[in-house]
Length: 138
Image 1 (cartoon, rainbow, N blue to C red):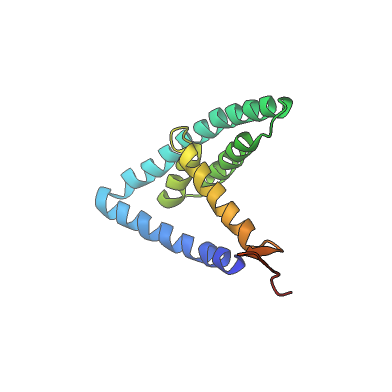
Image 2 (tube, rainbow, N blue to C red):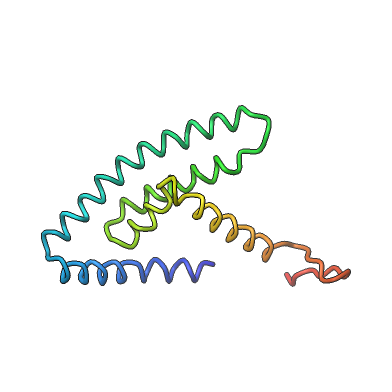
């Protein structure tokens, strides 16, 4: 996991710069700059709006007797989406908008839930293989 994260942090600026250059060559320098600024302004507005909704949903779920998994995941996605929108670039903005837009957030929630479930199953202390208990080394 740590290697993957380090690789992502090293590769993302390279990918973002390459995409910005490609977009700049396609539509021109000033339209590219304006598009990046417009994405940031729209993203800031969307973060405020969806952040308020996520906070209200989280408070409502915490006062209810059942577990607030969806509200917690949505709040986390809004937080991550906002952070990604603060990062200049088209790729991070696309992922950030996917985390923030209500129509795309359920898909992102499923991806995050599936990834976290897979990760927790892989790192479990005890695994059952058939009827046999297998303890991981260490």
